[in-house]
Structure formats: C-alpha cells, structure tokens
Amino acid sequence: MSTEVKVPALPESVSEATVVTWHKQKGDTVERDENLVDLETDKVVLEVPAPDDGVLGDILKSEGDTVTANEVIAMLEAGGGGSSGGGEAAAESQPAAPETSSAATAGETQQAAASEPAAAPARGDGDVAPLSPAVRRMVAEHELDPSRIPATGPGGRITKEDVVRYLDNGGDAAPQPQAPAPAPVGRFSQEQPARSPEAEAMPAGGEAPAGERPERRVPMTRLRQRIAERLVEAQQTAAMLTTFNEVNMQPVMEVRGRYKERFEKAHGIKLGFMSFFVKAAVEALKRFPSVNASIDGKDIIYHGYYDIGIAVSTERGLMVPVLRDADQLSFAEIENAIADFGQRAKAGKIGLEELTGGTFTITNGGIFGSLVSTPILNPPQSGILGMHKIQERPMAEDGQVVVRPMMYLAHSYDHRIIDGREAVQFLVTIKDMLEDPARLLLEV
Image 1 (tube, one colour):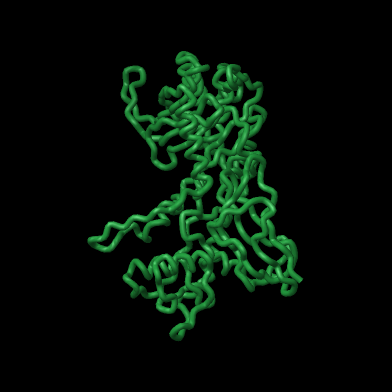
Image 2 (tube, rainbow, N blue to C red):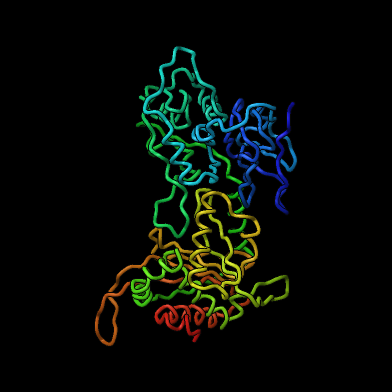
C-alpha cells in the first residue's frame, strides 16, 4: 500500500516553495512524523514529516524543484519502520548550490560528519553506491565517471565534498575525512559564520588552478530574493537618512562584570549587551513616538506597543524575528528570547508569524568586526538602530585623555515622518541611557 507525501499548506501570501534537502533517500525506512525533506519559501523553511511508518519509495521532486501546496513530492510504501540512519542520509544529501538548508542544528551536523569513516571501502570498477540527488546533479553537470571518484561517505557513498575535492585535484584526489562543517551563526554569536550559498558555488578553498578564471551562475534562494526585494523597496520608498553617535560602553561593561555570575545563576542565561540596548531603545521610543510609527498611504500609524525586531544572521540569510511587547520584558526575558531566536534561526524553526509586525529594529554588525555602517530600514518601519564593534579609543574627559571602550551607533530613519531633531535626540537618549545604566531601571 502506498501513501502520498504532499507539500503542506504554505503560509499566507506564499504561493510556492523550493525543495532544499531530502533527509531520506529511496529505500530508507522512516518513522511517522520523521522529517523527510526541507522546503524553502521566501520567508521560512518548512519541514515535511512522514505521514506514517514505512519505506520511502519514489521521490517525485528533486532538490531545487519548485512545488506548490498539496503537491505530491514522494511516495511512502508500507512496511519497514524505525530509523534507517537518517544522519547518514543527511550527511551526504546536501544541495549542490545555492540552496543550503539551515534545518540541521550544529549538533546534528557534527554527528553526521562524525559518522563518516576515515577511508572509503574498496570498490571495484563500476561498483558505485547510490548517489544522492545533489551529487547526481554535480556528476551530470561536470560529466564525471562516479566510479573514479574516491568516496568518504557512509557505506562507500560519494558525498558532495568528494566531488568538489575530486574536481579541485584534477581527478586524482585522495580520500580525506571531512571535518564537521561549521554551523550557521546567529548575529549575536561570537563564532565564525558558515560558508554562504554563494561561496559554496565556487571550489572549496576559493582557489582555482593556475591560468583558469572560473565562474558559475547559480540561482538565488527564495529567501535571498525576498531580502533583495525588501532592501530595494526600502531605498525606493523611504526618504532614508542616518545619524551617528558614539557611546562609552564602560558603565555597561562594569555592570555586566559585577553581576554576570549572579545573573546567570539566577536566570540560567548570560547577561549580554542586547538586553541593555533593547531597554534603552524602548525608553527612547516612548519619548519619540514618531520613530515607533509607520506610514500607511497618506496616514501615519502611531503604535502604542513596542515590538522590537532583532536581526539574526543565518546561513540562509538575514532574518528579523520580533520581540513582542519588549517594554514589558525583564532583562532575563529579553536575553532568553534573543538566545532562543538565534538557536531556532540556525535550525530553520522561526515561524512566519515571528517575522512580521515589528515596530523598530536593532542590528549588530559589531560581532563581525564592523566599526561603522549605515543600516537599511526594515519596511514599513521608520527606524533601525545599528550597533558596532566595541573598540578602545583615547577620549578627552575633564581635560584629560583617557582610554575608553567606545562603540559607534547609527540610527537610520524615514525623514518623511521623523525630523532630524527627533532622530538625533532619539539616538542621544539611547547614548545617555547606556552611559548611566541605572536610568534603565528607574526609567528616568
């Protein structure tokens, strides 16, 4: 008996999706509700669970194919049951380019990589393990003979990395065990980001054989297309200006240093910088309501609530989940929510409803080393705050030169409804709050 595996209902305003990664291959046994495949829309990644226990039959849609709601993408045959080593399938079933799934967590990525043997089993001529859709596509594109590609994947399977290494070495690659791929990184993590989809389109290591000038055309992911559309929309529809200031971060750093251990022990979360910035931004928004407003046609909508978007960088692109009613949250609740955003963004678990409806956004390029930049508005919002790298600089205080940990702040705003005076005073208010953190608790 066969059961159809269908595309689930897509979010409102989303008409189609792209098949990103099959976590199971034809012939694998699966359990009910086990994730079979990831689908990418222009906003979120959706998981398609197995409707029942059984064996995965024909896969009707390959990675990179476009699908619509309720479309049949695979068949599930009766029988089997239990896991068939989904980690092995996930380890090799990576898309060729540019779609890279962020549905695997860091732990799952490491576990899958660790399951690979140090050397491939011996194969006779023409004896090739089944190829994943991604590997099959790469082999076809480069007109390769699979039997000549040294395999390091589970069960003697050829992985995408094997093909890349084979091409980089002119067809004479020696199998090497692969180190675990770095996990996608949230904007507020200090780790280094994983290779982007664009980087994955070029040979590993970024080096080409001498004398060659390689280039490769790859389609944008749906999320990247949506990001591009919104950035162009922001520049074309808003009268966007940016004002800058700098803040002495020493008072905040002293508070964190004094209370970080007790804070973590009491709340189970580290005390970071973001909760201070969210609190300061909320207080500034209360004083300057136009920065928390938006334009709808010929009307200005003044929002009586404070939903703060927190920009999070992922392997798939930038996401801005929204911290609802930020004015009602404690420091610990803010830190917990932001940490949760980062973890779920990496795993592709951010829901569409969490990405809509913000009234103001905070973005932090400082963790990547940015000293100063101009953030772009997140429509229909009228303001965004850009944080940057904390750097020690000589400052003049009371006629003396002292060294202070300074950060440049940038406030981009829609000049159609926010006057320059308000924009500057808004940023000065944030600066004053951060340089005297007690004011955040007293709300003065």
